[in-house]
Image 1 (tube, rainbow, N blue to C red):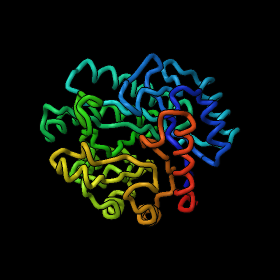
Image 2 (tube, rainbow, N blue to C red; image 1 turned 30 degrees about the vertical axis):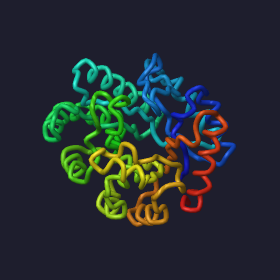
Image 3 (cartoon, rainbow, N blue to C red; image 1 turned 90 degrees about the vertical axis):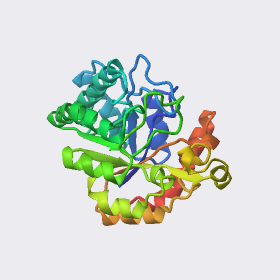
Image 4 (cartoon, rainbow, N blue to C red; image 1 turned 135 degrees about the vertical axis):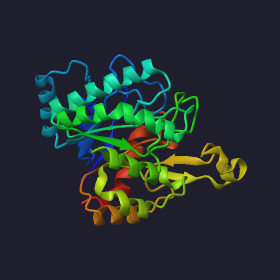
Length: 302
């Protein structure tokens, strides 16, 4: 395993600057944010571009990888998390076009994984969303395969805020849908244990069932605010009581998670995803959050 971080919070820094700090502080891998260079999504924890995938040349890709390798860093994957099942066809066309550019860039860089969302449309039922996915994703999956890249979906519901995710949600959140996904396509999972906590889905059981399909892991914790849960109830779908935290500050049993991953044979990257409001607002706070998470997770990552 290698311990690393997702570069999204460092939106105002260059990739070289992020790499310098990461390498100097004991991180071994980066998941590089790859939203459109001309401006992507404006929701929190999105929109960062640390590699301009549009028209990336083989020489530029080689230079990026040579620099990172020289600092002792690997690239766990390129990350772009849009909504390919958006209600508007024009939006779907735009984000799928960029997703394919991300896949092409990953291939040029020799990066084997591209992390993304399946997406979803709030106006459709789950089965109707799945029917749309069956029309859209075979081409994307084949495109990735032809470029030597594994497409990895994250298991995040993306239903926490209509303002931040106006187009819908991400249907790849439950075991029932993941079975459909793996029956239909040769793809991987970008596993984030935090998204299972508030859904009351057993992380240990989830790893036992899907561990062999995990190609990437996000390390993010989550705390259930019991007062917020009391006030809002479970029908609020997590709004008002699920609180993203840095690893070690939430409700996840990390020893149990890593035990399950090792038993499942997972030996890939573990990438810290920073969405903790207590450690944002300044560069120093962001870095402090990453360092805290590093120290919590390091004993498990060997």
